[in-house]
Length: 424
Image 1 (cartoon, helix red, strand yellow):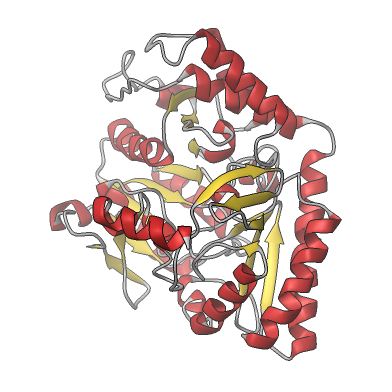
Image 2: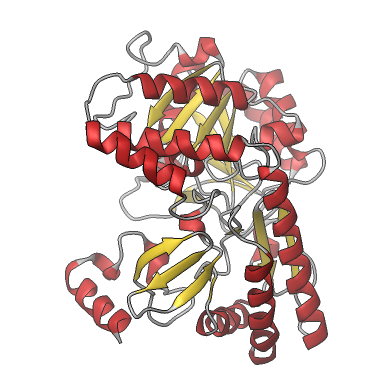
């Protein structure tokens, strides 16, 4: 009962017993697993139980856990210094690599978290355009900066209300929330207020309301309206970067944003994120421009070493294609097991991201995501967990596959699902 005992101890000292809310299992019920080691496609909890991992630290572990090349790079960097708070050659190398791989990046600034990257992108969009209004989409999560902790209830368009205590109504009023994949509402907003909009921020493939793909023409409409009205298009690729294609969603869909935020994979499991984009916009950042951003641990040498080693592995020929193939086999296999069990279920994938839904077809919007049978997912989650398969502890999160997942992990997952669908 070590998991239970640790959770009880944690709740006495840490709000909710966790350091990030979804880890608390409140969406699914039960006791969170406390992990003590990981390797390849597997995790081991404090009770010694092994799990096939489809969370991947929420996305970073594309090469698999504790890959020897990444561990060696981290150890070597740590042997020289844990932090300088000053420039290093490695951060220049990472910037060069990111600018080479991601189509829209001309300049890049390293930061420590995805939230910091998106927060800076919003500030930069406002500083560059001299406008205040930001547009986001319901169900897309861009970190916990005040301007982005805004959501909308029913209705296609509204000025946002705060979705967190501590976010002022005045701050929320500067963010407009639209429905994901709703081109007509987007066009209507720009026709009325296009000259007030500083930027539009979007997950080009949504992964924080489970996996929702962009409808044909949606990303193109974003690019067109931003260009036409002088607003900046911001792709939040913290999750999709190197997951849906080597150059991110922008490479896969052929859409070039003005600004891009990256994270997760570029740190290989350590805290690194980035903001990049067009040169004339990025040059508005301090110290060369008037938009301030700073961070003591930005470009931390140990984290940058992990990111460089991970990206070199991901860049190897065939890596992205192999993981995409494995992910496709995973969702097809799960759908097959559900059909044999007579369970209403659907699934889809793109790159190494996947979504599973207890509804007849994959959702296209936040409203459709909310139509999924959450209680059935919760039962399925716990049944899979008991059989050694670790899925995201929420019906509203995408899943992730790594290069370490292979046929053995897939077969174990399908065997577990065969039983889980019967109990769900």
